[in-house]
Length: 144
Image 1 (tube, rainbow, N blue to C red):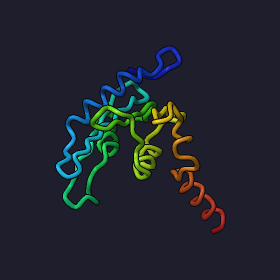
Image 2: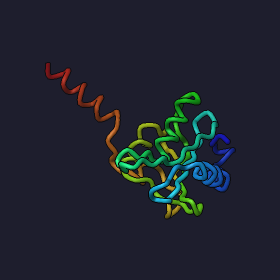
Image 3: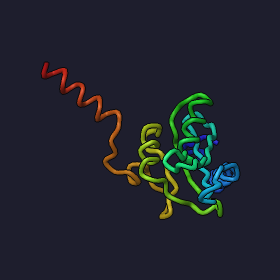
Image 4: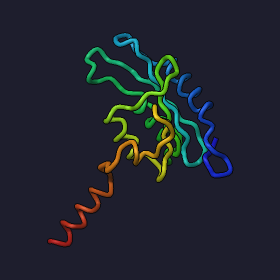
């Protein structure tokens, strides 16, 4: 299921994988299951589901599970991503999860949103990332 010009994203299959992941969600409080699915730069499919906690603040979003699965299964970068609710409808990740995705996205990652396919840069413009930290460190070194 790798993403190339010759092999574009099968968004129907990616949404189906996200919906399947969401069926494993642990949601005794909100009753709102969420599933996420992504394709990695080496063609793997990774998924995640939300896992609630009575304190709510400790709830893990589906994207957290997806990123954990990304690293458990060999690492790499995400090239295409979608998130769905229990009805299989596309939903937008919260701000925290958009930031999490920035950390693990390949350049130009495609993102299926409620308003169509977008790049991650369009979904979270001017995101804070590793480059900001590296730039700051370089600036500090040059002033010492």
